[in-house]
Amino acid sequence: MPRSLSSEAMKASLEKGVGGVLRPASSRSAFRNFIDHFLGRMSRIGVTIILTTSAVIIAVALIWVLSLVRLVIFDFNLVLATTIVTILTATPIIYITIGFVHEIAQKSKALARMTENLAIAFHDAEEANEAKSRFLANMSHELRTPLNAVIGFSDIMLNQRFGRIENPRYVDYAKDINSSGIHLLSIINDILDLSKIESGEASVEPENEFDIVTVIESACSMLRPLGARQQVALAIDMPDQRYILLAVERMVRQVLLNILSNAIKYTGAAGTVRLTVDRCPNGALTISVIDTGIGMTAEEIRIAMSPFGQVKSKLSGIHASTGLGLPLARAMMEMHGGSLKLRSVPGKGTTVALHFPHLRVRIDDNPELVSTVPVTRAS
Image 1 (tube, rainbow, N blue to C red):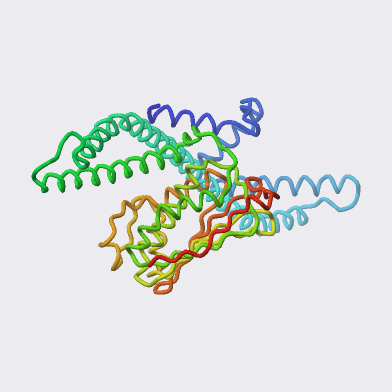
Image 2: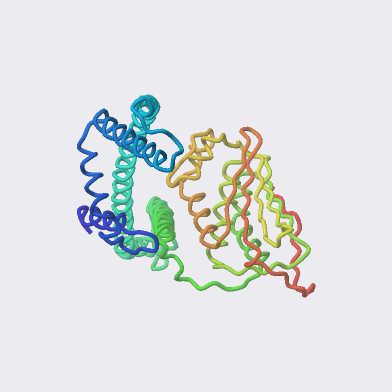
């Protein structure tokens, strides 16, 4: 929709009353419209003189009415005194009031213009966001298809499935191509996931009930090699009860992988990353990931939670990052009606709390199915 149309739509919406019903033009009398138009063309002093004169006439008329019922004696001195008092009292009040009215009218017009401009800007931003989502959706196939081919062919060369490659340098090249292609594909997937969630089009996967412990075990198993390489201890405190979560299992696993991998990457050697599962008094479920890493300041937290935001630290140059892990995890949590809270102290570590609402959590009372995972520490 072009900009002019959005402006007209905004003007139409401003003309609507409560409930979206248009105010009829006859709701204001012709006399009032004439008075507003007439007074609006005059200066502040001119309006003050007219209104003060009207007040004097009304005061004298009131004195005359009172004289008819013999409450006062209608004479020149009384009329003069009434006129003087009315002028002295009414003039400053009317003058100041008109100033306030003019100021309010100007602010009201400025507010109306600002509201219209904001509506137009919001409409344009929505259009731009929709265009971005359409572009990414259309490009996803164009990017993924050749990229999957590159990954597949490089994997064949890397594993030498059709014959031995004599020169080992070619194998190293194939390994670099394969790992780079997988990394690029993960970036594309993260961008597309975040874009779909922001545009409200990510609810294509069905939700199902699953054991949260099973998903945690899966995520931790995938990241134990990373913890071993980083010499970071991974401690897992599992609950005594079996919690069943209603959600998109892939997204919950992705959230855990993003949070845990960040915690391991930014925790130095001999550090610890601990995962806990707690049930809140209101029935909600909280999964906390606590590390003893480098920590962040409030400004660094803001950067880390923004898309493509990368915090500069002594470990940032060691680990490649797109800056999408935390924003994507937060978006996926909010899509489930939950939240992601982050607390951090520089030099002491970071705590990321994942809150799932109570409506998505239930307890399985079968004690035989409770999974107990011992504390596992990477060597």
